[in-house]
Length: 382
Image 1 (cartoon, one colour):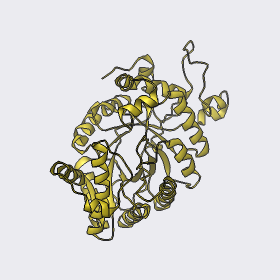
Image 2 (cartoon, rainbow, N blue to C red):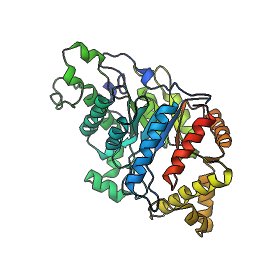
Image 3 (cartoon, one colour):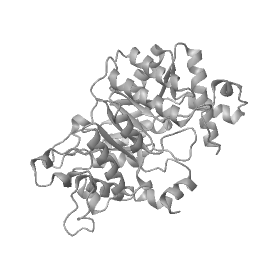
Image 4 (cartoon, rainbow, N blue to C red):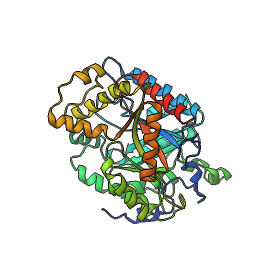
């Protein structure tokens, strides 16, 4: 793992969510509302686009889901950066979050995540500073180091073929982003006179500066790299259990073992993404999750497309290798009746010790995504 440079080391006490005054903001990180759930529940939205639907349809469903999650007591609603995937309309998280901010009033909104190597840190600081100005105290900045796409698309995004170098530079990029968010490059630094706007510079020299907020930073991951870095910096950590279940326990153990208290957190805070879909009966739930499984088969074999219909998924002639993949994939999805989903999620929390669950579901039909969230909320009394 690359070692943080001087800026990264200097950022350790403030790398996420600390106010410029140094006050910890753990309240902006730890979930609260949970109904009868064992931990707070949140939502990760991939803005799925199904066959026969448009991106506009998918985004309209996401708006309804965010409003539902807001009214039913979910803690966060995050969207994830993906590129060149026809079935995922979330290539611009900041744009989507600005729209969702106008249709919600309580729930925290964030990125799950923004892929830092794809962007200049200053651009991200400006985007999320703008979001914070639009929805004060409700914005989370989740960061990942993966491209969120294939290698060719990543090269087109970054205008370079040195993709491995981009990932290895992640600690340095993170430190630079934190400096822009806090507007605290030291005197003599080449960026000392550059300011992310909206941001703390607009409150400089006033009482408002001490009370200024900026989005808490989360590190996201599907392996041990970000888990260890999050632990070393004392940041909250979000693990992608929904597509990397075999690595969940090792990554969470590494995060907890390497955790050092910071101005942000006194103790580790681990969120895990969990694939979950509820329907009125188990058969219908299986029909719906099979569409997501077929989408993953196509993605893994270089054939990404729109989310197929349940009928297409049921009729698809899976090869033995593909069938093994589907069985493995569905083994990590919690689906069925609302009570069955609740039982499965409760077991997942007990098995992992997660502090928060973030639910996600790939489904062909927008109404299925919305209805699933309603049923899960009902099951937990949210």
